Image 1 (cartoon, rainbow, N blue to C red):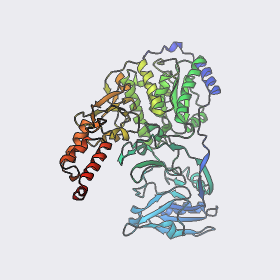
Image 2: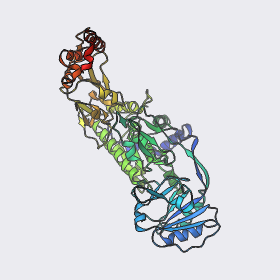
Image 3: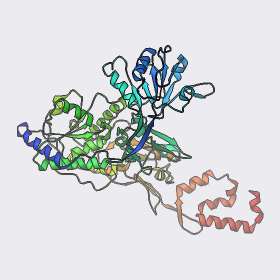
Image 4: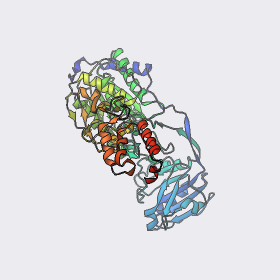
Length: 572
C-alpha cells in the first residue's frame, strides 16, 4: 500500500519515451467554448491616482486614439493641457475618496460616490455625460479605500499600475490601455445546473462554497421570490475554476471541457504511460503560464513527471488529485506560482488539507499529495518515495461528480486500510453524516424535500427516513428545514463501510384513518397536529376526531355535519 521505491530500478530514458508517447496519443482537454461574451469599449478612460502619476500617464496616452481621458486625482489638481481627445479633471475630497466605489468591467465601469439620503453620484454621467467609463487605470497602489472592491483578480478592463514597484513595466502597462478599444470576445467558462445546487431551499441558505472561493467576485447569490440562486456574471468570470472544484455536487462545471473529461484524461494518460513502459509516474498540476516560463528558461523535467496543464490551479481540486492516485500515480504535486491571488492560495491549501485528511482516514501516506513552491526545482524533479497504489485504470460508470468521486474513494479504500472511524476533516469539507432525534422526528419529510442530493429519502409506502452518507455534502438545508429541530449535522469523513450503505434513521407504523382504515400519516404526526390544533374552533369537540381521518373522510365528515346543522358553519 505504501511500499518504498527502489531508485536503482527506475530508468529515466524509458520514462521520457513513455511520457512522449502519452503526449502524442492523448491531448489534455482545453476550453473550446465558443466566444459568447462580448465587451464593447469606445475608449473612454478613467485614470485614478495622485496628480503626478496620473498626469504622467495621461501624457503618454494622449493623441493615441482614446475617446476621452478623465483624471480623478486624490491629492491636488493635475497640471496638463488638453490634446486631440477631451480631457476632464476632478480632484476628490477626503470624504469622496473614502466613498468611491468602482464596479463593472471593460466597456461598463461605473464610478460612484455617495451623496445625501443614500443617493449616489455617477461620476461618468457628471463628468463626461455617459453612463459609464470603458477602461480604468488605477495607479493608487491601494491608496484609496474601496470597501466594495473585494475582488482579488480585477475585472477585464481594470488595469492596476504600482508606480514604484512596476517602473520597468510602466510603459508596457500604459500601452495596454490604448489596446482596449473595440470589441473583445471571450468564452462563457461555466454553466450552473440549479437542480444540483445545494445553495438554497425553502428560503433557507445552505452551501456557499463557490461564493467563498471566487477571487474575481463573479459569483453572487440572487434572492428570488422564495429561493436564492447562484449566478455567475460571465463578464466578470475569468475561468479560475475554484468554484467548480469547490462545488460538491457538480452544479457548477466548465462548459468545455467538463470536469469529468479531465478525470477521464488523467486515467487515460496514466494507463498509456504504463503501456509504454513508464514507471513511478508523478502527476504535476501546473498552469499553462508557468509551463511557458519554464520552457523559456530551458527547464526540462525528468520523464516520470507528467504535467496536467491548467488555465489556473483552481480548475482541479482534491477530487482530481485523488483520481490520479487511484489510477496509478505515485504522487501528485501542485505547482504554485507567484501571481496567485490570496483567495486562490487559501483554497488550494484547504483542498490539500482535505486530500491529506482523506488519505490518512483510508490508511495511505498523506505525502502522496504535495504543494510545490515556484522555486522548488529539486522537489519538482525528485523521484517519488513510494510506489504507485495500483497499475490498473479506474473505469467511471457515472457522469455525476459526487458519484464519480465516491468511486475514487472506494478504490482508495480497497487499496488501503481504513480507520473504520469518523475522521476529523478541515472546516467546510463536504463530508459527514446526520444525527436524527427519533423522539422529536415526526417523519414530515421536510428534510427530504430540501435535500439537494439523494442522501435523504422517504420510506415509500412505509413511514420512514433513510440516509446515505456518501451522498451528503453537509449543506445544512435539512437541519434548517426540520420544524422539530430533530436533525444535527455530524461533520467528518466516516472511513467505514457504513458510509456507503443506506440506513434507516427513523421509522414508525402508519396511522390508519378511523373512517376507512387507510394509512395516511404517522402516529407522531397526528399527535403533534392534534396538540397544536386542540384549541382551534374548527376542531372543537367531536370535530377533533377529523384529525385522525384521511383527507377524503375528513371532507365527508364536514359535509355530514353541515347537512345535520346547516347553520353550524356560521358559528365558527
